[in-house]
Amino acid sequence: MSRCVKDVLWSNYKYTRVDTSCYAGVWGLMPRCGYGSNMTNGYRKPQSFGSGCLWKSNSFSSFQRHYASHASTEQKSRKMLLYLTALVFAMVGSTYAAVPLYRRFCQATGYGGTVQRKETVEEKIARHSKDGTVTTREVVVQFNADVADGMPWKFIPTQREVRVKPGESALAFYTAENRSSTPITGVSTYNVTPMKAAVYFNKIQCFCFEEQRLLPGEQIDMPVFFYIDPEFETDPRMDGINNLILSYTFFKVNED
Amino acid sequence: MSAGGAFGGNRGARPVPPEKGVFPLDHMHQCDLEKKDYIGCLKSSGHQSENCRIFSKKYLECRMAKNAQSMHSLVHWERDNKET
Image (cartoon, rainbow over all chains, first blue to last red; front, side, top):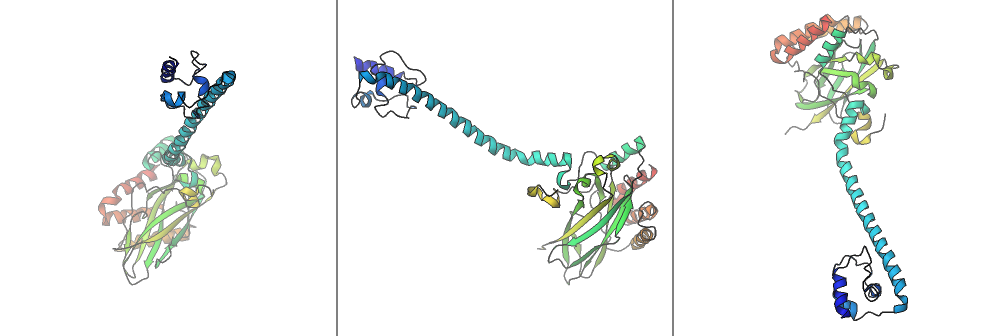
């Protein structure tokens, strides 16, 4: 009789609440039976529970209390586990999301020298000519040329500097010479300093990003056509900036 | 700014390609004279881009004549810009 009751109660077991019926025999025995932390099992054979367990009537209430707090700590730790797991996934997810977000942030703020791109240069020129903006501040653009290690080219800017007003396009040249005895292909990359001004530096046409092949002993002029955005003058962050340095570096491309 | 090491820090983030693309290089040295005029003008006028605008236009027109397709929009751009 008591055994049947135990079966029923055990199969209906919900650890979130204490079942008051027949609790005297059933619940109080659980901690004793080494039930311990295995609360997830919905069902257990009553035999293991009924045969090897001892039951002491006078210590039932302490069992009940022990059980109740045991259940709530179990519940709390389960919640904590779920919370922490969700946190881990959230962290990993945000790491993956950081790449496009950071790129957008860089474009919006020009951080790290990113050259901004919101409208094309032609649109910008059309807009400024319509507005009738007049620029008066002269900016000196200096040029710098580098080659990577192991690249036998002589690469120098043809002119030291160009003085230009924002909104005016300017042409500049670099001269490269292949000093070796084999044809060499190079590709270049550029950078504008100071970095916060790079936002306003627009290149219309240049020789960068595409492989350029020079025959042995060949010398060639490489033009860059650029212009500085007129908004450069109105930006308060650009107040002390009158010098821009355009720097190109040539890297060797391995020919197959 | 020297922060942002992941994106190259001082070297800046990914550079943006030029508006009108790549300048086809003058391997044949056909427009050398115009280029020399321009550089000479720059040196004599204190590197003022404004004073030598006419020479840069000549150079671009020379390149366009020799290498038709790619310089077309460039010269239009230059012309529009001058009118402003």
